[in-house]
Image (cartoon, rainbow, N blue to C red; front, side, top):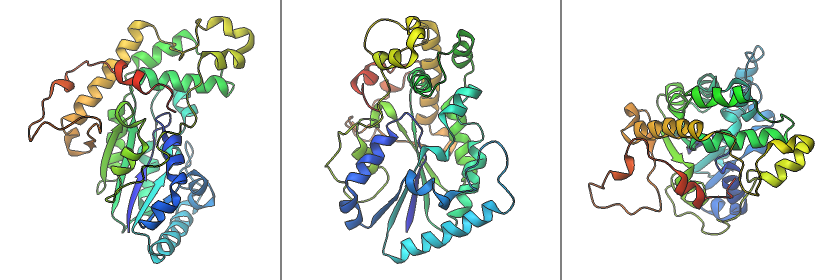
Length: 309
C-alpha cells in the first residue's frame, strides 16, 4: 500500500479537494483507494503527533505511532492499494501564521514526527502553494470572520517585507522526510481542478464527477463588512475580494512567490518536483521556458480561479 500525505496548504482549495474525494468515495473505493480526511486525522488517531508550540506530552508520540501503525495494517489488510491522507492542519494553522507573520513555523518538526508513523510504507508528499499576496489576503479575511479584526498597517508591512516564502516550507518538509517524493501543486494551476490534483497522486484514472463544487470560498467584501460592523468603514467599496496590501506591498509578495516558483521549476535542489499545469500542452521534449521568467505576475490565472476556496 502506497501512502500520499496531502498536507495543504490552507486557503489553496483543500476543502474543495476533500469534498471531491468524499463525493467520489464509491469510485475511489472500487479503485482500491482510501482517504483519511480531517475528521479522521483530527480525532484521537493523530493525537500527540501534530501539537504545535510546546513539545507533546511524554509518551504521546509513541502511542500515536502505535495507533496509526495498527490502523495502517488494518487498512492494507482490507485490500487498500492507495491511501490518501489529506489535512492542512498537518502543517500548522492559519491563525499561527498570522500571529507569527510567517508560513508554518515548526512544520519540519511536525512532519518528522508524522513520518515515523508511516515508516515502512512507500510515501509521497503533496503540497499546494499560492501566490503570496492572495494567500495572506485570504488569511486576513478569514481572520476577520474569526474575530481577529482588521490588521494594522505595521502588520501588513511585516508580511510584505518578511520574505517568508514557500521555499522555506518545501525545504523543511523535504528535510523532515528525506526518503519521500515531494510534489508541489500551485493553486493558480490546480486550485480549480480537484481531479487534476488527484491525478498527480494516484496511478489510475480519476473520477470526472463532482469536480466543480466550491467549498469554503474566501469571504468577499460584503461578508467582511457584516462581520466588522462599525469598523467596516475602513474597507474599500465594492463587492469583490479584499486586497489589504498596497500596490508596492503586493508587488513585493508576488516577486517573492515568483522566486519560489523559479526555484521549484529549476529542480528545487533535488528536494521537490513542481507539477506541470494541467491546462498547458507540452511542446515536445523541450517545452518553451517563457513562462518561467523571473518576476512573472499571476493575476491573470488568479482571476480565472476567482471563487475557489
